[in-house]
Length: 401
Image (cartoon, rainbow, N blue to C red):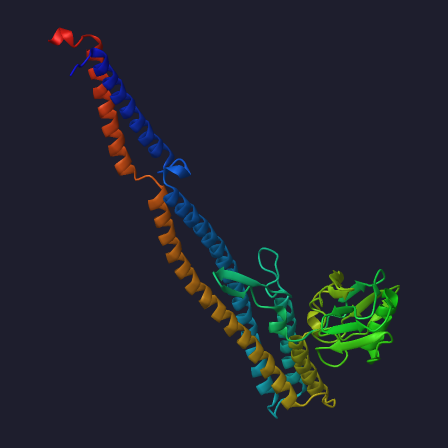
């Protein structure tokens, strides 16, 4: 077998190229911290690692939601604790008011105390946190704190205060462009109209008004209600119509806090909707059940001080104070349960997140100790190959024979 000088030189060059490529590959892994530069390096590891990184990012979203819910409920619970303490003082004042030895001045003193507490609780019920958001908002949402688990975002104003009046709330539906044929339907909230003949939008709005205000049957169709009576659930005020625009008004306690939603329509077998225009009048805390029951106690004390006839009996006053006390303590307990659930979820998601991050790191990240050792080995082999090649260039195989 023949061995030429060129073969020896080519083997040296290949050895250097191989060692250089290995050294550069390990150097890249060390500098980037990534074990693979492209998916083809290891399709399974890369795809699995990317999926795990996505799941870790999603867990971070849950963590953000958990912190938001925990903070919201913590602030609400603190506020409710203060209100409960103040109502306890009111209940004690009521017990004092039943002392037959009290005179007019004593009742006036109790009245002043009750008024101060009433006004303080009124302010506390609509107070805002440091970010400018209501501690007890009108609307709360379902917030996802882990896969397949949602909780309430906070404590709703109505949970604290009971029913309250919001007479400024309105919702409008523009039917002016509608033309119904027999069998077509229009649904708002719990009320559905089914046309038995041709019906214009203007006529439809007027028929809704007649039905909602007086229970009058439709003149060109029939009404059906899955709610109670002839009203749309939560909208028991007097409805009105003008040029095909139906207006709902909230004029009863607790109504009008949410829109019935868009009017669902099925017209000539084509489904669609008529957008609603909802106007929320805001909170009127002086009309809340919480405020009214405390104010009844203030009125009771004033009547006792002046010797006037009582608007409400002592039994009714006591029952009212007990009712608001029970409602707020129940809301606080419910909020505490959610806070405890969030704490458990935090711990569980934290453990899962740590495990996922570790697994993703093991799949995708460079093992610096192993990579540094491999880089050093490749660099040593490269240096040896370069030294050998330099010596081969200065001699030939025949000079050694």
